[in-house]
Amino acid sequence: MATLDVTASAPAPVPATVTPKAPRRERAPGSRLRRRNTLIGWTFILPNFIGFATLTLVPVVILLYLGFTSWNAFGAATFTGTDNFERLVRDTTFHTALKNTIYFAVMHIPLTLGASLGLALLLNRKMRGMAFFRTVAFFPYITSIVAIAVVWNMLFSPEAGVINQMLMAIGIDDPPGWTTSTTWAMPAIVIVATWRDMGYYMLLFLAGLQAIPSELYEAARVDGASAVQRFRNVTLPSLRPTTFFVTVMLTIASFKIFDLILVMTNGGPGTSTLVLSQYIYRKGFVENDFGYASAIAVVLFVICLGVTVLQFLANKRRDA
Image (cartoon, rainbow, N blue to C red; front, top):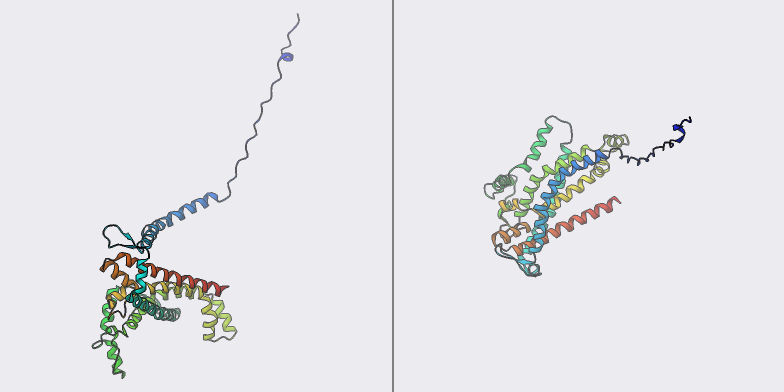
C-alpha cells in the first residue's frame, strides 16, 4: 500500500511580506521648547497689542477721519474735505500756539538733557546716602502736577515769592514778573518742567553710565587722559544710544506738553503760554468743535512724527 507523502504535496509556505515602515519624522531638537517659549511670549505681549489697538490705533484712525469733518460730538459728522486745514492757515491763534510749542521745545529739550546728564554724573559714584539722593532727585517726577504748580506759583509770585525776594537781595531791583508777565511766563514753565523731568531722565543716563566697562576708563588713565578727556572720549561716545533715546522721548514729551501749563498759567497771560495741546483741548472740549480740534491734532501728530524721523535719520547717518 502506497503511502501519501503529505509533506511533498503541501504548498510551500509563502513568506509574509514586510511592509517597510515610513521613516519616522525626527523633530528638531528644542522645537517643543521653542513653541512653548513663543506661546508664553505671545501670552505676555498680546494683551498689550489688544490694548494698543483698542485704545490708541483705532482712536488715531478715527481722529484722522474727524480732521476732515465738522462734528460737535452730537449727531453724525459732516464731511467737509480740507476746510479745517485751510482754516488753520488763517487762524492766528493756531500760529501763536505753534510758535509757543516750538519755543518751549527748543528751551526744554537741551536744558533737561544737560541737567539730567549732569545729575546722573554727580550721582554715579559710591558715597554714603547715594540711594537717598537718587530718590530725592526722582521724587518730583512722581509728585502731583497740581501740587507742583501751586508751590511754584507761590515761589514765582512777583511780590511775595521767594525767588524775587532772593533776586532783590542780591541787588536786582526790577525782578521778572514770571507767570504774570507775557515775556517771562514761558521761561518760568520751562524751569518747572526741567526740574520735574530731569529726575526721570537721570535714571536713564545712570543706567547708561553703569553699562560702560570700567576697563575703558582704566585704559584712558594709563594713557594719561584727564577727567575732561575721559568724559569727552569715553563717556559721551558710550552714552550715544542713551542720549539718542532720551532726546527722542524729550522731543515727543515737549511737543505734547499740556497739564503743567494748564494748571500753572492756563495758557496766559493772554496767549503767551498757549501751546498746541491746550488749543486742541479748548477747541474740542470747551467749544465742542471736534472736527477742527482733530485737524490741529493731526498737525501735531505730523510734527512729532517728522521730528522723530529726522532724529532717526541723523542718528543713522552718524553711526554709518
